Length: 265
Image (cartoon, rainbow, N blue to C red; front, side):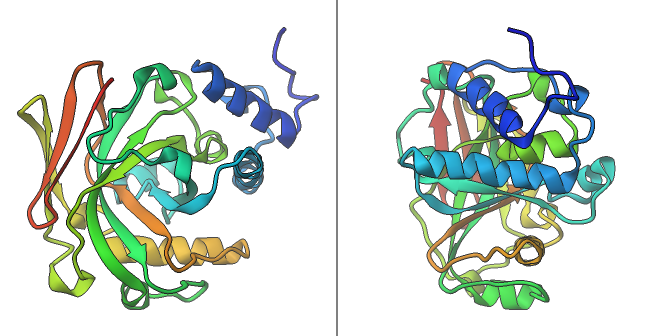
């Protein structure tokens, strides 16, 4: 059956298309090519509807993720703050567990500085200092992103509606007080099967991961949403994402937050 044309599209149909692509493990063309009226506000509405469907199916929201946290990526997309999306318990990979590639389309891995919130964080007017004060623990981690769009080619409304390519994520075993380390200087070295392929510091995440968290809290606040105590926050990819292939292992070695790794199974 052919996809609806632009005159027939609704946000329900956007969500249907994206969830079907995820469930059937297939990529698709950009939504905006068929629904050019999809703007950023509508895309966030679609994202909320998508997560509501997942919650209704038994998943639980456990946090948020930030995307496009580098100034260069934001400039290319025409925004001045990170985009936000949702994490659920179905996305968690326990230490040592592989990412099952038969459940994914074309996964890529990004290193992440991960916050756990000790208290609620509600925008607007959240500063980086206020955001960091709300963080109880910092972990090293990774995110497995898996866009439902062919070759990861999308516009901003596309990727927002698609819950910012969220798929899987994992945390390391070391939890530190956020005031015990220099998050700007915290280095992550990315290795694929033992070979170094990239490296970056926390400065790559909006200049400081706490600044990214503050911007996310304020953006959510404008939509009447709040970051809850106990939630996990993936602050944004520190480097470009690397493909995860079957039998291959991507490891991230942090300066102070230990090593995390994930294999393609």
